[in-house]
Image 1 (cartoon, chains in turn brown, yellow):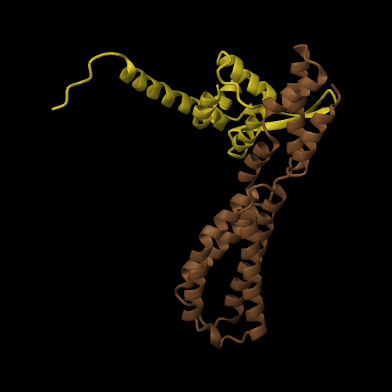
Image 2: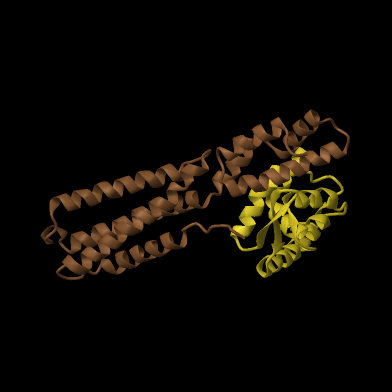
Length: 191
Length: 114
């Protein structure tokens, strides 16, 4: 069986929501299922309908892949740990009297805006239930957060007159988050 | 059958590992192995097998490779050493659990409490 319009329409619904390599794999399974029905003597239309019913709804399958998408998981972990890391930095910056550092106000405001934007991106990825594409924002958000962490570490090294003791928690937290962001970069499946 | 599929949820991953113990299989073949191996009782919606296989692969318990069959891309999975260890451990736990439940469900006098 090369193709059937019902099978093609079902796969098109999946392709609109899932990565191409996942759809390729699902297509193979669905066509195998359909071929089995044809081998049992069903006419093509009935075989295609039965195969689709046996396979499960496109919504359910796409939903399961979205729920376990790496980007969604990354975003959820970063959002869960974010308040603790933020609190560490807040205490650190107060202890280090950040208002005495020679940082232009616009840079500080720009940093805050960037941080809020990253949080919004991570929230979009973490709350995605139907769109795999949206979960990929989680990886982008993780990388952007790593850049912000690196900027904060650079600011401490270059601008802080002295190291405040709460930084003993904040610096490793940021370094860990940078490492996690690099680790969470998607692996390309070629084999 | 649907109720059994629901009850199966917590055990799906170890059953998938068991289905791969005898050698590599692709998703549809894994579903058939589950159905045939259970005498037709565990006939899951084929599509639900694939997300579970991806979870196992991400956990390093199985690994997949692509081939081309009849002009279609096919992903075939096999157990990793870590997956085999997990299967043996889960199988041992299951035997202990099943033996305890069976012992309790047998019709016999229950121990008296004091």
